[in-house]
Amino acid sequence: MRRCLKCSAKSVVYLPQHRLALCKEHYLEWYLKRVEDTIKEFRMFDRTNRVLVAVSGGKDSLSLWDALLSLGYKMDGLYINLGIGHYSELSRKVCEEFAKSKKAVLHTVELEKDMASIPSLKEMEKRPVCSLCGQIKRYYLNRYARELGYEVIATGHNLDDETATLFSNTLSWQLEYLKRQYPVLSEGNGFVRKVKPLFKMSEKENALYAFLRGINFVEEECPFAEGASSVEYKRLLSQIEEKSPGTKLRFYTEFIRRVHPILKQEGGVPIGACSVCGEPTTSDVCSVCRLKARLSLGSSSSSPSS
Amino acid sequence: MRRCLKCSAKSVVYLPQHRLALCKEHYLEWYLKRVEDTIKEFRMFDRTNRVLVAVSGGKDSLSLWDALLSLGYKMDGLYINLGIGHYSELSRKVCEEFAKSKKAVLHTVELEKDMASIPSLKEMEKRPVCSLCGQIKRYYLNRYARELGYEVIATGHNLDDETATLFSNTLSWQLEYLKRQYPVLSEGNGFVRKVKPLFKMSEKENALYAFLRGINFVEEECPFAEGASSVEYKRLLSQIEEKSPGTKLRFYTEFIRRVHPILKQEGGVPIGACSVCGEPTTSDVCSVCRLKARLSLGSSSSSPSS
Image (tube, rainbow over all chains, first blue to last red):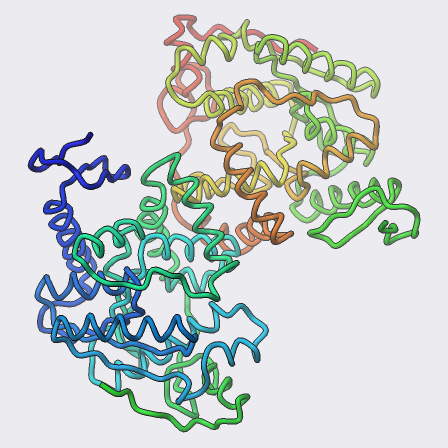
């Protein structure tokens, strides 16, 4: 049995990519320090900023919220109810309970009220539902964060998410997407600053943090995620990681260190405001308003409830 | 059963990434045209150039030699005897027989005479043997091509080789290696021009060409290749290819179309001449001469026999 590297107590975890065994206390300490260091390294925000964390009810976003509150950051939550039956109901309940236990503010957006639920949209759209859903979540997150006066949006994207996306964008060399693959996306042009403080933490590391902190999170995956290419890419990258621990972290950090600065120099697509809702877009009408038009719902909107 | 798209005869192959079924005659025609188009697209060489093809005895290099002779190019072969027991003996025999049947010139380099066999070098070196062997082959290929007056070196690297290498260099974002990943490496600084006319052809497509042309090739893999990371990467990429035919080709061609031009602008490492053998190198003494020094064999060299 491995002993904690810090105190020689019985370890609860061994992190092969860091060659590190830790007990419960020192794992939590290590995790918080790593999150804090990431926030500082990329100047994501400080303790004066109003930060909105996007919570889904899963291990990543709730660990992020918990960790940032523990570190003394001002942090409210936003839950987008996607209307995916039991899964969404359970997720909402878990987020509400977490917020209550922390005496924290949780805003909620009802997608069904504002346009339509994801299952209805899935029927209408041909493209993969994960791509559609991601686009919608980004839209509402940005819009409500700005309307509610938040300076920063924090999301729980972990190392596995980020490397799967990086891999996907690399396979097709989507330079516009690759250019946006960075732990901080600056504010401006109608965008609120977006940060990913957990980008160095693996899924397993977040799950262990949530478990050791006694956080109640939704363990089931979104029922629509099955068969998604991101799931397949995660599986492939995990095969490599198992043989060569540290590959994922190096893949991502070397990209942002060596390649991102080069891509950033290349000209980008100009951003304007959607002529219907005013949200930032590269077209005249943004993709969500185009979706709404197809739903024949016009562009009437609801306000988030808190 | 699928019918040939060109003549409706019984097809011998279906190429999912091209959605193309072809009979024997039209497959061979398609293959030769694709090789010829690649040579022209990248201005690799023309019928006035003296070209040296690096042959290993495998399906790729012998298909390349056969295809280029069929297309009317001037093409001699170079076989490097790596001294890997039965495998090398068989490979040499197959290359010699092919050359004889085509009345073509085959040069041979005896690695053991000039420095040491790959099995001996493997014992001495800690790094992966495939990387060591690749370096040695590139060295001798360039040196003998230049000494023998060839203007171009053609190698049988196929799409599976190239995408596995691209994937490996992408995982660690080795910009210097990525910059050199292109189907044509120009002559200059002591380097003979190097081209890869089969970079768009998959392993299977080359194997089928060799089979349909009745080429006798060595089917066994190099005994040292087992467990190599390139083999692992080929396996992973093939899993993706199977689900999404065309992914490999797009991964490589989009890289050279979109990313390579950007990387090319970045400054490179200066190339000088090795102070021992005169071959191009980024150091004072090239890596092969450093290896030789460690073997205490000095830098005496043999000439290729033909």
